[in-house]
Length: 480
Ligand SMILES: Cc1ncc(COP(=O)(O)O)c(C=O)c1O
Image 1 (tube, protein in one colour):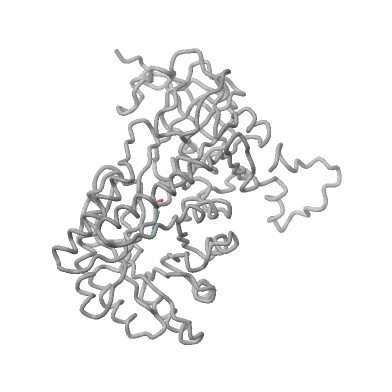
Image 2 (cartoon, rainbow, N blue to C red):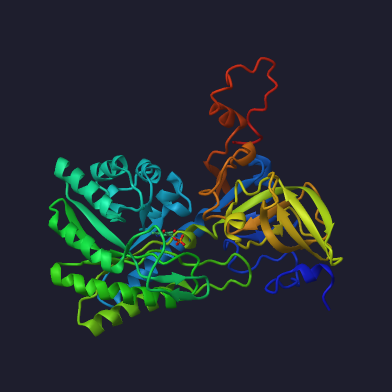
């Protein structure tokens, strides 16, 4: 029988047998609990992490990132080798980009995809070879394109006729020859568990398939541009292979027609590989996905009697998402009686939508666990909320947490490695937390947390140097 509180739970959320367990696949492989029940990540206890760096803090498990990067590399190498071609795997930096993470993925044999001048500079500063960088974006400025061509990025994924002309002018001026892909919209919308194929798209990215033909013809007229192939990205957090297959088959139709006008050596099928945010998410293992996607391209090529192109992929979330765990401190709890008589517990933490906008932005689901100890009481349906002045400031919409959770406890939200730091803000003048890497029992800051001083320094109306009575809080605790 459902208790009144459980009637507020969504259907997919079951009452856990153990409210302290760490669901398989949702946490980094290193996650465990120590003898006192505290969560341990990469061999470092969350108590130690919170003491050293304060909360909130995003903890990134280096081995998890490296293992996943390697798994992608190996899976696509094997899958393409089986069909006589090759694969390049680009880490989609938009998921989370810092110099350290860029170096990890490069170390594991990946390339890096960037989509703004800022991301490009981080990759370059990290020492990523320009030839290993792919540059995306629907509105790259002339300055961004000039910089990309000047440093010699491996490829630019062009998104509009105007961009082609910008590149034509730059390469004519500099004498450079720039390799480009043409981004197309295949009309396949991949959703988490399903996909929807439409003929027309009403969105800002890429060229509709018929328009792409004209774009490629124009590129081929330009001596400064070297056409590499088509690019297509169908969405994010995709679990199955059906959407990739359908999209690849549509892109292949155009690919074949383009062969009449010259070589089309490559095809980039984008990213979008899903991860588990809660225990019900069950992403297909990457080696299976890789084998099926590559086989579908190979079959399509064989049916058309054309050579299989070299393939590229751009996973972001699937490399870094599961490696991240955000630690918060619980500040208040409040039991709110809903009209039905059911009670929902609100657990307020010391961060929120400024460090994790995904719940507010996309209605994303996350899970959470009491991290500083094991809870001893029964599961209590809870909603984890932040400290921002916004009722939509929800971090975890629905989760069972121990009923004896109290202020001062540490709460861990797993699978926050992707699109949390990238989308973070200073809403309500809350400083952005540090990112701390853990590995083999050691921890280190890889992105410094912001200080109040950082925030004040951007306000031209504040004399930052003048803190006459020394009362201004500067650096929160730890290494921020
Ligand atoms: C062109 C392109 N490639 C790759 C990605 C990475 O997607 P994901 O992080 O879901 O793998 C995105 C995400 O929006 C994208 O737009």
